Each structure stands twice: as structure tokens, then as C-alpha cells.
Image 1 (cartoon, rainbow, N blue to C red):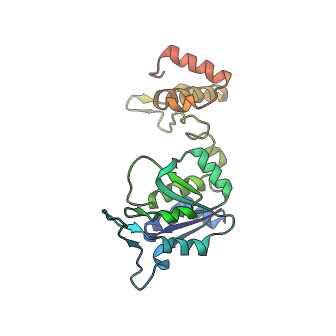
Image 2: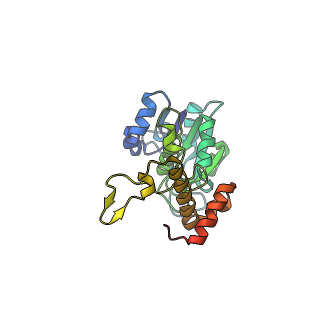
Image 3: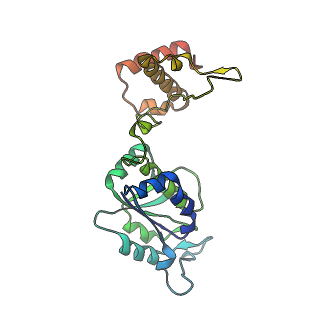
Length: 243
């Protein structure tokens, strides 16, 4: 997978590039990731990257010329250009799978008060990672990139991601490890039983319970099979407090 990240703060990605998951994907040739410094495409010795808004107002605006010059340098016919904006579509796990299949992404990190609107004419898609304000697009770019790296075949074991929250429209079931008992809190007996079918059903039930309790909107958007409907009825009969 090829990803180019356009930013005015490339140093912010130094630890991200050294992260074991990122480094492993790059070392194995699964990921071609480049951090592009937009200041290198700005005018003059002072690398003028921003300016005050026409019409007045607070803050500075990311200029369009450096962005277009950088895009001219790194964009291919296959590239999908993404900007992080408050008006973008909310990012979901399904988008991670979709963008992974795109294979060639350019992520534009805005900063300051915003980006010159003309930059949007070069953008294929706008994404939002949430209804809150960040100082720039660098953290969203890392978030999106990390979500994609996890899906690349050979980065991590496939069975490690198959049952994670949101992969199947449900929150993940509770997980435990040693010790079996800690300060009066015991690992559920079924998980220590070695009975594969009972463990599978317990995990599905707890996944449904957690989703019903904490994210009922996910259930509303998911088609449930007969077993899941039966288990949900059991949960309702028991109450949502757990076993």
C-alpha cells in the first residue's frame, strides 16, 4: 500500500514511523509510507506556508500553492486524495477496508484556522474523525494510517483482527489473562473450561451484551441471525447487568 502524508509538521510523525507496527509493515514491503513537508513547496527563503484570510478574521489559512505543488509531485493516476475536515464523512471501520483496497492514498493535513478552499478542488474525499477540534490533521492522518496498516496482510495475524470491535458490527467480548483470580475478581469459568463451543457462544453473548449496553446504535444497523436474536432475548430476560 502506498500512502503519502502532506504536512507542515513532519517531525510529529517521527515516533509514528518508529512504531513497531508501522516499521514492520515498511520493512516487509507491505507499506510505502512517505511524510512530505509542505514547507519544501512554499515560496521564498521563509517558506511562506500560511496567510491571513481574505475578508478579515482571526487565524491564518494554509495557502493553496504549496499543496498543489506537492500534489503535482506525488500524485499518480491511482491516487485517492483525502483531506481531514469538520465537514467530512465520519470515519468507520468499513472505510478502513474500503481505503485499504484503494491502495494509493494522499492525506492532506490542514492546520491553522483552515485550508484555502481551492485545495478542495483537488480532493477526492473529506473525512472527519469526530466532532471535536484539533490543532491540525496530523493526528487524524496517523489514526487513519494505523487503521489501514492493521489490515495489511502480513502485518499482524489475521485472527487477531477478525473479532475486534466494529469488524463484525459488534463490540468485542471481554478479554482476560493470568492470574485466574485477582482481588476477588475471577476469570469466567467457561473461559477456563477448554470447551470450544461454549467459549464461542459465551463470547458472542458477551459481545452482544456489551453492544446492547454501550452502543445500541450498532445493533440497529446490523442484520442479526437467528442465533444472535435468540441470545439477545436471553440477555433481555436476564437484564443487562451481566452474569
